[in-house]
Length: 84
Image 1 (cartoon, rainbow, N blue to C red):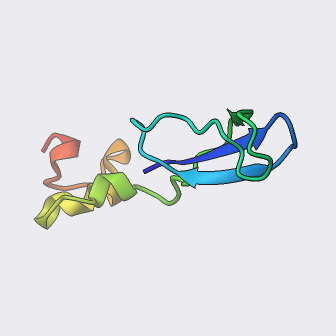
Image 2 (cartoon, rainbow, N blue to C red; image 1 turned 180 degrees about the vertical axis):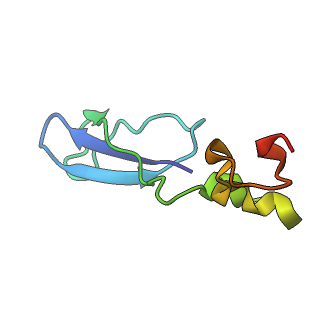
């Protein structure tokens, strides 16, 4: 579930709320009780970091080593990526 950030245009109160994507946006400010909440744009809460995490996540056996394969320089003997 994504985390949404809101700010009240009336009093400036800010809050973050964990909501389903299908949930209606919040409108009532918990601080001043006015119907003045607006969603803020924010950065996502995750980073794609590291080398080849997606390449090796669900592979088994010899396929798991494709991320370390050096097929561009011909260093993989018998590797499917090298075409041998």
